[in-house]
Image 1 (tube, rainbow, N blue to C red):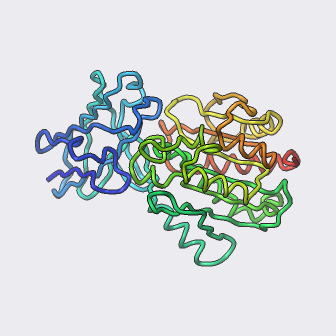
Image 2: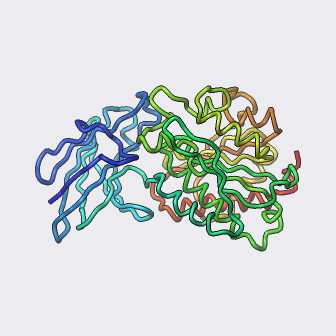
Image 3: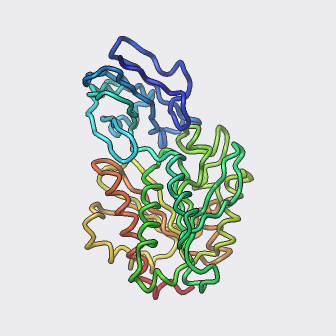
Length: 353
């Protein structure tokens, strides 16, 4: 009647012995972290199939094996694609116990809405159909997966009009990919915005496809790079591909979009105060940006990062934003990405390097 599977790309955990059936309607799941870093251990994704003709109450015991961050794990989601339903979970030590109503059919159980590699297929089809959007393969990862950039605008655009958008560096942080998607949609739809029409935009929606496919939390692979902190210096081939991409774009602004588990604040780390102050001011009146900011200026104090790489080579101003899922939907997070890129367009005079 109820079947739980982790035999697919992106599942977490992927080890068979970490999904245990306790009864017909009860399962224990132990999520996996590739390096044990509790700051990033928030990846959970299994398939759930109900073969009955009516909904079934199913008990899931999610054993995170991590007591420190349990307050962020007091719920689970059931759904797929863009539609998810929250279910509360009672916390018992390192275990989150959730009673989930599973309708007939196939679903996914997760902690956060998922952004798998299959989502890129729709963007590929759109680019292949012709029109303003183009697709550029950037290189292959050690796992044989191609990192893709979706681009529009004149590749010979003026230096101030070159924008790079990056999401999906940390596999569990799916809000970054959805926000990047929303930003790209906004640029594609900005027929009447003179600033956006001048831009050359290059967007990588999933910067770490191997990590996503392996259901990882932070790195490009077991023992691989943490792209946020090491992307500018690591010998890891995924990091090298992203550096070559940024060298080819030479962006005046890099939007590096992430997710995190803070519930009542979003994150805003940045390399230049002037542009950031203007962006924040323009976002104050936006209904979709509904939380305060927590962050700081890093300048060049993150020596291994892609931000420092870009700043030293191209004078790039980086805006590194993290959005929390709690209480939000997929359309909401997409709208936040759109709001950020629209605010950036209204600051266009400040983009001159």
